[in-house]
Amino acid sequence: MFKKILIANRGEIALRIIRACRELGVPTVAVYSEADRESLHVRFADEAVCIGPPQSNLSYLDPRRIISAAEVTNADAIHPGYGFLAENAEFAEMCADCDMTFIGPAPAMIRQMGDKAEAKDRMRKAGVPIVPGYDGILSGPDEALALAKKIGFPVMLKASAGGGGRGMRLCFSEDDLVGNYHAAKSEAEACFNNGAMYLEKAIIGPHHVEVQLMGDKFGNVVHFGERDCSIQRRHQKLLEESPSPLLTDDLRGRMGQAAVLGAQSVNYLGAGTVEFLVDQEMNFYFMEMNTRIQVEHPVTEEVTGIDLVKEQIRVVAGEKMSVTQADVSLSGHSIECRINAEDPNKDFRPGPGKITSFHVPGGFGVRVDTAAYAGYVIPPYYDSMIAKLIVRADTRKEAIVKMIHALDEFVIEGVPTTIDFQRRILGEKDFVAGKFDTSFVERMLEADEKSSTKSVASPDKTTATKS
Image 1: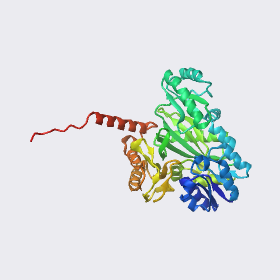
Image 2 (image 1 turned 45 degrees about the horizontal axis):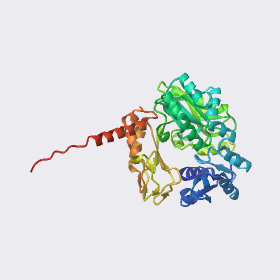
Image 3 (image 1 turned 180 degrees about the vertical axis):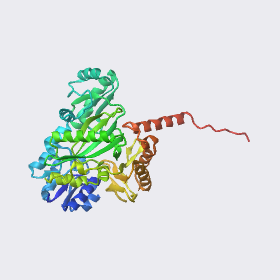
Image 4 (image 1 turned 120 degrees about the vertical axis):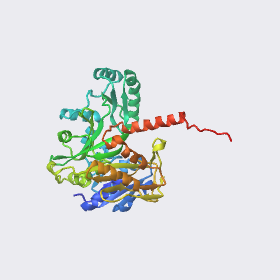
């Protein structure tokens, strides 16, 4: 096991890793920017080092500052959490060059899976289903148009190095494709310094289902069931649950096997997630692989009873996985709501500021992962997530009811939040019935806009009476 782990992250995920390390008996080092001086991860780590000003490119995204902090504190391993440098192959290489263990897969693996085009090639060769139409990197708009005509519209343009919906365009016609190609390519170059594009058949109304897995140095790969992440806005996840209400036992088994097969084909090490799209005919297709622990990992922990962060640290340290596939079973149902400092009534505009009142819900089967507290100031420089609220119950219906009550108990004042919006999602008939896909939230918002427009166009009439 490692002697000391530096956590190259902030907020709730840094706290989550600190807690796992405590149980493993490993001292921790927190790094923080000047904006995070009063953060809880700084308080609860064994040591803490300031690594720069608030801007992330001058602190959490600067590999040299992270490595320097590890060197001065004699840390022999670095856990990147998620986001920031978690999928940065150059950073992983720097760790190796400085005789520090990067708690994640090897740099080459990060590069292979981070390049979506190469990842699709590898998965296809391993026998994992991929979306129809993909045929490598496009040479330009003419090749894109020829391929689109061959497979039929609608099609999806995607950046090879993309993520979070950047560099993606849905095209329903030739005019759409020609107009969107250069826009998507320019966005990809600006965001990822890589303008490589590919094209595939658009799957309309899919579920977004991902499979959590873990691989060790002995060639073992185990999957821990799936999470349904279809409730999202602009490709950003809002609510996740496990197991998926869509999947049958047979489909669950086949998707799990496909994820394991893909991971084994590249000798995967550590925690990872294989993301799939499931169409309306229940066909599933590989979308991408995330080579890190994910925001939504708690729902998998709740239904499997396995601490994924501790398992991740153990296997990267060289230990054999503590469970086999036969040991893994899903029990009950878990839902996670991401509580963000955003205003849904203002197009989800972020609302950084001081939290004046903070009360978290509790009770049997309720978990809150957060680094916030009353008096904490949410800085404007980073992601707007305040907390992750997770519940577990015996059935999905019970989990929904429990989550609604937990949201009702969650009190956050001083900044706008998405609590009421999350509660509304849980009350929608189609969500309760499991009849939703990745466009569910957009349809909700479009219905709101139409209702608002109709209300303005047809104001209430009042009747005047003569005295």
